[in-house]
Amino acid sequence: MESTLPLIMQVFDRHFDAGKSVFRELSKKIKSRKALELYEELFFFQVFLQVLEKVHFSNTHEVSRIFSPFRALYKNLRKVQHVRMITDGFDAYLAKNSLDYTDYEKQLAQNKKELYGQVYEIILSVQLKDWESLYTEVRHFSEGMTVLNINTAITQLINEEIDFFYFGTKSRLDPQTIHEIAEGLKKVTVLEKIRLSIGLNSIFTDKVHEQTSELAQEMGSWHRNQLLLQHLGSYLGEKERVSKKYQSALTQIQKDHLRMTQNITDRCKLLFTKMLH
Image (cartoon, rainbow, N blue to C red; front, side, top):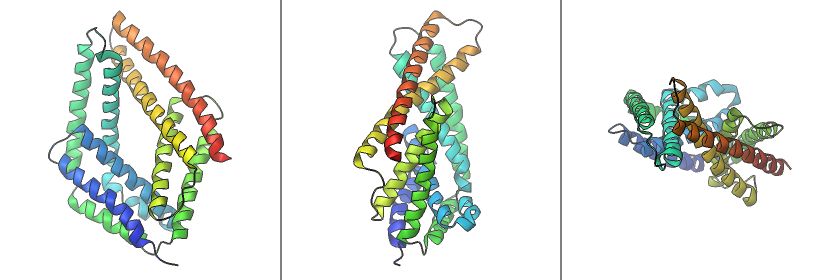
């Protein structure tokens, strides 16, 4: 059977080049937009390596090890994403208000400054040889793969996510489950794109993909609300007295959180039933 190495490496090359390029920019100066771009590329690398792990199921440890130099960076870039979401939540709920929330805004700015300093140190610790090793190892484990190998691996990974989705719709979704479903949807989307890039058909219909995209957007809004609720709640929890302006804002955030959680629960039950049948 014909090897898919040229096709599969073309898929990886695009993300590798984009990731390495933005990494170089961040090594000069940290910018949130660029940090989020690198986070997305590293997410792709992880999913891609999971495909390789399924193909090389007897050697998963060696495949997983490829990402080791980037794990700390990935984890902290996720924190950058969270700070960005909290800031967006602040803009949506508090900044547009005529009341003064300067003290909380200063706390957010301080958290961001400290995190960016940590991320920059981690970026400087990742060497160019780590990128070269990543590429070399991915190419090595991609050699000899066939369309059948990749189709089987991706199908297994998607089925694992679907099984979790279905389990998650049996009751009201808690925050952790929603986080995991959101990550799962993102993973499935990447896997489907890999399939299409090497000439395989999409597993799901266009309608399901459309609904998945809409759900992912709604989960993004829920995530911003959830992170702001946690961060603001923690900030206010350290104060002896909480002013009425914060109590009012917190009440509205909690109210929206309950509404969005219920909407997501209902949409998940509907969507995943369609995905499974």
